[in-house]
Image (cartoon, rainbow, N blue to C red):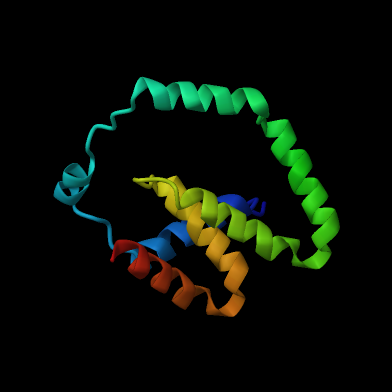
Length: 128
């Protein structure tokens, strides 16, 4: 009998292998130095609560907005969607391996045959 292929598993292993060769992990001491407790004032929390009462953000509303954008953009939506993913991920202080894989996948889809250089330069710029 032939062995059934799991393409998602293969893709996952491939991207992990590629990410490991292109991105060197940061040292734990660097991460500890950067991790500082975040302090928020009560007024900023109240401001966020006031802002959230003006417009409700949910997964459904985001999905509907993305569907509308896809209908408007047509063929160019894929590139814009990858840019959206990268912009959202930029806001994070630390990246889990899954986060890095998502970023690398978005860069891969966005840059096609030049994906290795795109991933390399992205992480080089991110770490500087």
